[in-house]
Length: 109
RNA sequence: AGAGACAGCCAGACGGUUGCGUGGGGCAACUCACGAGGAAAGUCCGAGCACCACAGAGCAAGAGUGCAGGCUAACGGCCUGUGAAGGCGACUUCAAGGAAAGUGCAACAGAAAUAUACCGCAGUGCAAACUGUAAGGGUGGAAAUGCAGGGUAAGAGCCUACAAACGUUUUGGUGACAACGCGUUCAUGUAAACCCCACUCGGUGCAAGAAAUGAGACAAAAUGCUUGCUCGGCAUCUCGACAUAUUCGCUUGACGCUGUCGGUAACGACAGUGCUAGACAGAUAACCGUCCAAUACAGAACUCGGCUUACAGACUGAACUCUUACG
RNA sequence: GGCGGCGUAGCUUAGUUGGUUAUAGCGGCCGGUUCAUACCCGGCAGGUCGUUGGUUCGAAUCCGACCGCCGCUA
Image 1: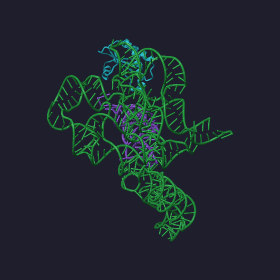
Image 2: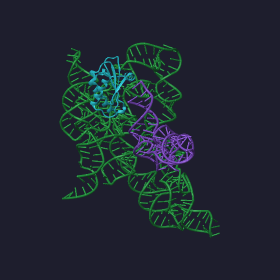
Image 3: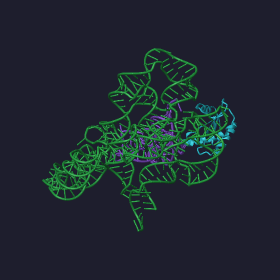
Image 4: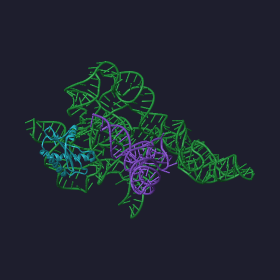
């Protein structure tokens, strides 16, 4: 995933948290809002309750891989944040399905 | 054969497709190289580096260390020894200075807790009691060193042998200390209670700090320089808040590997050889195949040396100890 | 990344210059009072003092190592 498609700054995350609509299923919460910058940017937030650094990194990397697969089909002009909500291990297929379902539900595909 | 003890190493490998970070090449498309750990962790110590003056002087306060010798840039680390404790043994463990410098504390029990005589024992006495004593009883973590013999009215290091503790001559050892001899029995424990002695320690930390851009406010005297006081010194236009998140610091270092030599060892010297992450919302992933007994603990954030803690499984070495069997 | 603090009964806590059996309130249970309920009165239970080693005759308390939680620092 190229760096222009990523959310970078703390204030960007805070903006999304304040102004976003949300959709969710039992695996993820997805926050999204419109942006004046043209390409859609995506961020990930994995809190400490999911475990130690190795486990959190693994969840984040799997999410990034799943999102970058669908990225070419996503429409421009949004900021998006994904937050996991399950405490058990994730299966990659499950993440992939979840991600496209949530993006579809929000109308970004 | 079984059960142990010691030292050390590894931490999945190879291949394919699609992706990520850094660097090089290229106008570009693209391509090449490299890309987490033994603990990267906890942040318990020691340093480098940066700023405060070049890190200073004195007094106080505070903190740490505590057998000896050595190693190291340094250390609270490591090595080799000493002593003590544990183990049949190989071997392991230990915050291991000072209690005759002083102060404090020692509940309950017990006659008595730093001091003593309750029951006893012996003598005197009709008795009450007085005197001597510390064997025996009982309390306690701790009660005038233990035990045997002599001795005695009964007893007692009062005397003797063996042991214990302390002091000390000589000898050995760089030293901690050890051995032998002599003397003494000097009334407990606690210093991870205060304290004493010896030694060490200036503070803050890469969000250190340096450079750059944009837009401001205030205004001439004290302020700042990160434990207190005194002294000394330095900076002077100053200030705090805001935005940018750009560049440097940022990875070649008390570095790794191999060999030879010195040393019991930690380690050192010399020679050769190698370059091995450097991000800034933060790079290792996704999907497969083969091998395998199996993949544990776990993810760099300025850098090193240690310590501590977590950890599946596999392997190696010297042939070290004990038990059993056979020869 | 750096620094500091706190863990005691179901909840909130006292005890933290070592000493006998660890304190109180709320809550819980039992009994009394009332025709009945509440208030009220009396009693009872409930604790590996976060875990684990050490110092000491003796540790919630002193020391070390871990675990968890909270806060400060841009």
